[in-house]
Length: 580
Image 1 (cartoon, rainbow, N blue to C red):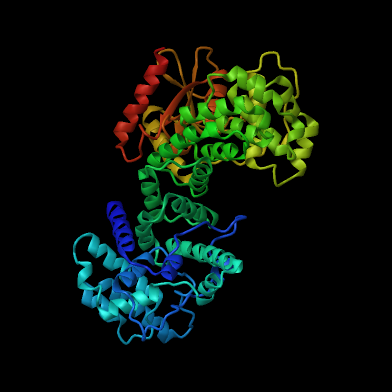
Image 2 (cartoon, rainbow, N blue to C red):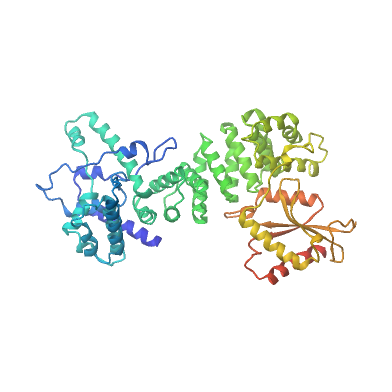
């Protein structure tokens, strides 16, 4: 389907290039342009107030050129004005008429069947015109019809006139008079015109039809569409897949800002695409050396990679080298983003000592206005193994906890779990630590912990299999609160002869086993997959607490497998541990 979209775009471009436009028509067929700034949606404000442009020539006096009219119609697959395409009537009969037209368009099987809909139909709108031209473009792409069969049809020309655009007369007059205001006015009008045009791809004809238009717009325009989808929090799967395919297929590289915008959109919309991710990361690596002035765009790239859990060691190492080389211009928040992303992605640079000495030590507590930001920074250093005793002491101190607890907005379950991580790390991993620890009655222990629905299904499937291996209920416990900031999915113990023991057994030879389900959200994705930083920390803390760990990854263990297969899987894991 995506191939057809690209071909349809090519047809549009070819027709457009072959058309002989007048100077006014050329000005009016400007390409899609930038979305509104300051985080505002493209469809709001001035974009919705863009005036409708009318032809400066009298159609009855001068017949329009057919090739130009056809080009204008196909060009409008990109340049549809969303505002004028909307029906404003509340009359139920009008709504019924519009729905009837939509149904007739969908059911039409021939060119004549499509164009007949335009005749003597007061409810026919620009939206319907766009749908008809879109269908004709697709049919011509797959050689179902030829353009010559309908390009001179008066009904098709009517559709063209509905979609075609020209430059307003006053703009042309300004140019003829040689006034400077004419040029400025033109730029302003074209700017608003382009902003409005972006709405075509973003929704005028529905997601599937909008996806067909992507192949006919430029790479910068694709990035703008993707950014606007993110601003509007609109996760249109057909449109995103079309964008991913066409951006990935483009031979033109993204600049650093464009790459950051694409990654931001992917992270905001939770859209994973390995091919697009590889393309963007490669372009970031190529563009990084040219950026020697600002770190904000680098911070944006890092933040997006962390949110997506996208692990590509090459791009992460390149970003590390850039930060080390340009540390004097790096903002604290961008450096903090680097450490947090590295922690989440379980990434430790080959130059970790340089990172510790040059980057980590350049950040102080006063750089953070929020207590939670300082907590997140210390937590990230802990996962990387470069935290200092004084830093952990600072977040476990009574003074810090009091400030953190006073702000309910930041004292979230995530903050509580990270405090528990740090408290356990200080006790189990930091040799000679003499700083503060969480008091036994700390509110941090009162954290609700539960798995996502998908992970709980896996856990339940594992527990069903365990019932066939362990003789009694008192031999296994599930969903155990570790008091270290995470749940243990199941615990059990065996003796040296592989015999299961009751959990209350005090045998000195008992082998404690923790079973941990690893689902999609517990791993990093991208080029170099691995367990995430938090998952890796949980395993480390369990091992230091005396547990043998059996990870149960979702890629190896499925509830769709028969019970016998799941039992055999766990049995093999138990044997491997007990026989050590």
